[in-house]
Structures are given as structure tokens and as C-alpha cells.
Amino acid sequence: MINPCLDCGACCAFFRASFYWTESDLATAAGVPAELTEKLNDFRLVMQGTNGPSPYCIALQGKIGESVSCAIYERRASVCRDFQPAWLNGEPNERCDRARNQWGLVPLTPETWHLPDNFPKAA
Image (tube, rainbow, N blue to C red; front, side, top):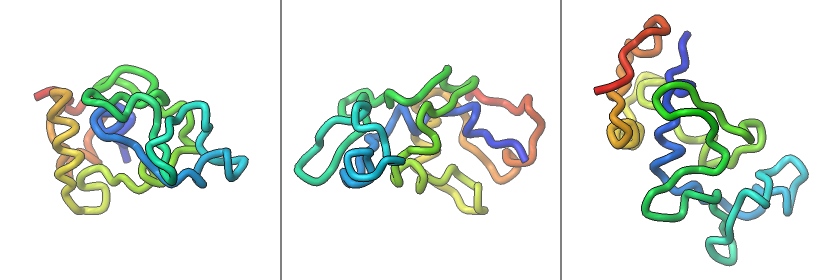
């Protein structure tokens, strides 16, 4: 199965990534690196780059729509772990669709998960 997220990254450059501070390495050694976060309030942190009008996560590497990865994938926050791309489990996700649209990428379809490497990426 092809994972279109490895060609996308739009959600990492569209949404704020905030999470409870105990998910960081301030509380657990395997947590999100605190140096990549900012304080949102007394209880929550946010990934640097995502708390503004043009979010772009500091941990996102590569070029959106071509090839991307997360620099802290194994240590990413629950907000990132829990985000489901459209049709991964047979269900749509309008948030995924909105993020992809913002970056000029076509929405995912159920068939996207079974297409060869050269499936269409741009609208």
C-alpha cells in the first residue's frame, strides 16, 4: 500500500499542533523535544511554527506535495499521531481535504491508497 502522506505534508503546514505539556521531554524522555515547542498556556505546548496565521511545523522536512517526513516522527505528539488522512480507514476527513486544497493538492480518495507511485498530486 502506498502512503500518500509521504508525498503530502499539508496538515503539518495548515493546522496548529498543540498538546498537553506532559507529552514533551519535560515530562518523559521519549516525548516531543521541548526545544521545538512554544508555550501556548499553562497546560499546553505548541509545535514551533504552527501557532500563527501561516502554520508550518518546525519538524516538517522536505517539500509539500512531493516528498516529506517528520524529523521527530517517533516522538511526535498525540495530535499528530491521531490525525487520520482521508480514506485511510474507509472514512473521509474534511480537515485533510482542506489542508491538501490549501497546498494545491487533490483530495484523497479510497482508491488513492492503492494507486501506483505516480498518482496525480496537483489539482
